[in-house]
Length: 479
Image (tube, rainbow, N blue to C red; front, side):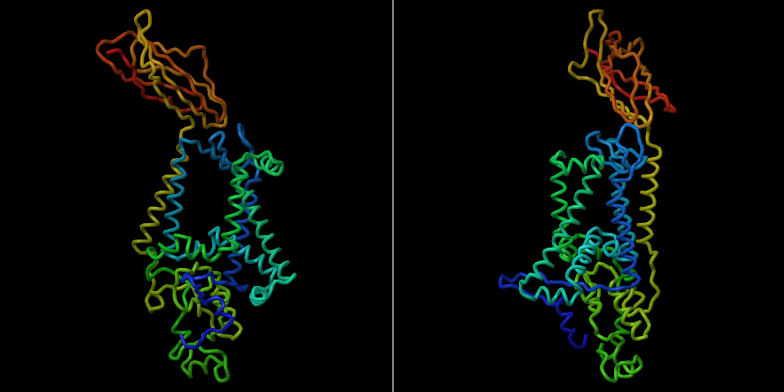
């Protein structure tokens, strides 16, 4: 790299160190940029924000629960995802979903690098909005730098204060919206503003407000650089075939490096004849970077692959009439002159495992039983000797109806000769739609001196269930 960067760029790159020997925070003032990647990021942001903030208000008619499309009902221990109801016994679906998400992240990272961070990460999406607010209130990059360097005047106090008020407003709206997923939104939002909501709702709102304000407003690039573990282990998934945001050093530097558009070096042909590359050292790529790095120094841990530097460089190339692509998505192997191999053994392994995990999860959801049954023997006492000499065991039968209609059940005993099933005062068992029920059962039979534990099964026949369910159990006899 020949020649220093412009002083305007050095604002992002200087590393002040305090007297204690620790590095102070480097102020970063990202500049706005237009281009295809910036438009893509805005489109993803609009979709993400629209989904997050509007989904709690989407009505979805269902019986036995609030008519909300996405509802995490802790009280009734149900997660409602449109027509899908997730019960406690199916919480392993969450583990499956997390495994799929991790595999998808590994697969995408192996092929296209850190694009999740640049386009879909919550930190990136909220930081983009916070930077947009800051830019609207305080002005473009040079204006924000001048404002920070100036003394505290009424104008500075107003702009800084308004920026933080708007940040806190977005952070508060973020926290409130998150809470609305855990209750019926139209009622819960009224409770929140009238002081009638549960303490957990206020605590969660306060926590999300504070973390959003700090992470997206005050910490910003420090989250991506120091706090996010993904920045640390991403290199384990990168190889020479991974697509990354890359600077074409051969084209940009040539023999003598880069140089500005000075007299005699304003035409591409003149620069090539003089031994200089196409990079005019404008610093635009550094100024638009949200983490303040210089992509011309090569791949760095701070790079989140947002591609804004590509838009910046393409704009400069377009204004000069030169070909785009000085900064672009590229692989190290392609830069070396070889053909990249995106679908290699590692990536194929990720893809196959991802597909298998997805198929298993979908199969599990589709084939899940509409009736969960569990039986537990009452062990205090383990058995009772009746006056007529018969032995009685007691059991607790737990039933969970996952259907949207009530179920009528018939229960019988299989595998015990001369056994009598006693349901007490219950003559007919019915379970409401998406409801649970516990039934105490008693089984009596003559004493058998040959066995102390006799295996048998409760058979549950229900309307709407294709085959009767058989639940194994044991009958205890005195020794």
